[in-house]
Length: 335
Image (cartoon, rainbow, N blue to C red; front, side, top):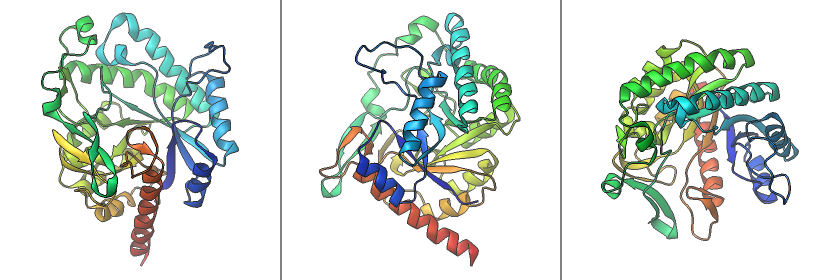
């Protein structure tokens, strides 16, 4: 099945960016939880995962011609991930409310992760690239002297087995709710996909781990976000990884890197280590509805970014490249 192209909207971007997305054929949004205040008093009336904030965010997007199909964000979850008893119940309730409200609003996919303590990380954000651009990167040596995250002082020693057990418990709790409201979960890989990060174990860092995830709770609502930048650091055969996991791939981050999982830089699309043609062909074998967006991109000269990897011009260039790639792959498949 052909992908449906989405873009992540981090904030109310300028009108020309909305128009550019529509001109490129991007009709869908992979959104974040709204965190703005209603007015200058900055009173938090409801949480970002409650119904009305999500409804206002969805309507803002629709008024600009885009449909919200996924939320790539989550309430606090470290109590759930790490098994902190005094936090777990409240966090599970927040996730359940998010899933229920997404279902009521027709938002189909929730993209979450199992990175405890520290989320996705880059140790360098302004590596000079060609033509005046700069890119982000990660080096394990940069954090060799970094202290353990403060949350470990609260929970003590955590093992990989602990994280797997807590993930299974979480899925057994939340999947029935996701089934009830028809929201598909799509877990994101660890980023970077290394065995541990500053003393906290990581478990979603291999193709085999995702196969294990699929078996933890056997439901079509227990799915995967296939972030190519991470998977290409896990395996040299990205097409084979896609084919192994394709039945549960609901969202794709299409990006590329150079290096290995311990030392890498993100690249302009088409200049990394992944065979993008083979990847596109394998992705077209997915036979259910799925969505794709460009992920982190280099910041081009004179571009504007609000978060490293999320600039304007780099994203527009990458979207155009990916659209062209899939247009050719689809024609080749059909001939």
